[in-house]
Amino acid sequence: MGYGTSFSCDDIDAMPPTAQHTLTMKPILQNLVEMTGHRDHLRLEVSVLSTLQKLSGILEVRALELFSDGGVHFVRPRTWVENGQLVSTDSEAAADPRREPLEHYDALRECIAHHGDSALASPRKGRHMLWLPVWMHDKVSTCLEITQSRGFSAHKLEVLKGVFQVYQNYQSLLDYSERDALTGLFNRKTFDEQFSRHAVNGLASGRVDAVAEALPADEGPLTGEPVQQWLAVVDIDHFKQVNDRFGHLYGDEVLILIANILRSSFRSHDRVFRFGGEEFVVLLRSTTLSTAHKVFNRFRLAVQEYHFPQVGQVTVSMGFVSTARGSPVEILGQADQALYYAKEHGRNQVCFYDDLVTSGHLAAKVANDDVELF
Image (tube, rainbow, N blue to C red; front, side, top):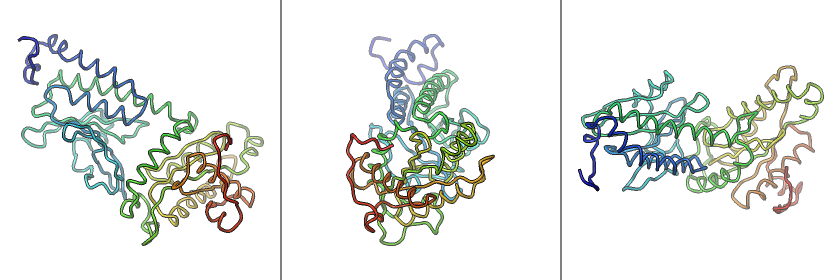
């Protein structure tokens, strides 16, 4: 075989293991160097798909997103190859026409149910599939799917799982760097990036048929009411008194429990951040003003009705605003104004910035980059 000769999957699998190793490792190592140079989950995902697509014999690679809607588990392609280019979806999960019930993927469903690390299936002749679920915090929200025309050899599986393990470990490192150590919520340094993506995706998907994922039927959009994106600032009322009276260990427990209530109160594609201390920020995507009021107040009531060990009752105040106009610092400033109005006028309530301006309770202000908002 001369230089420039290409090798098929059959050729490589027929070679001795040492020869297989020599032919496959160099390009893989080069791609791993590129892959681990990324500091963004989506770019890292695109990079690993590109790496896998270049391996011999691979017909198709996709990154699948796993999500629930109305109690049913679904799978949809999030990133895949189309006309030789890697592309990512920008549609809402619940409205994505490519979504399929997870029950259509028997091998993958069984793998996840048993906390497995891989699943194999051959749905029809000439289509052999490998699924590699990405486990994060004991849950799977992403899975790599690899398809080729013949069965996977032991050597091929070893190579694919090796690349995948590097990818999963690096995803975990990125996730750790983006999270608050105490609560596990996103930290403040990830806010700007998430806010930009939230705004772009919200504009792309801001239509009535895309907004009702995981919301009760009576909280769906009203006819003719515009769908928007919302930012809320949350503050725990009298939190200093909790620390002073019960100590910081109980204060930390309150923060963790509030974070848990936040997670359960919002959808998978909304974003929740801990900004430090007792302050949190929520990005609520693609819904109407009336629904935003209901969702934010539902969270407030969930906190009010929760019994916190030793501490008893805890309440929160919230201020929120549409993200349609202004820079992140301006929008944060407006939500912060609404929050402090709520705290100064009784606490344990949700205030909408535009209502306060319209009623004359607040004067419209424009924040500047030199103002420390929190």
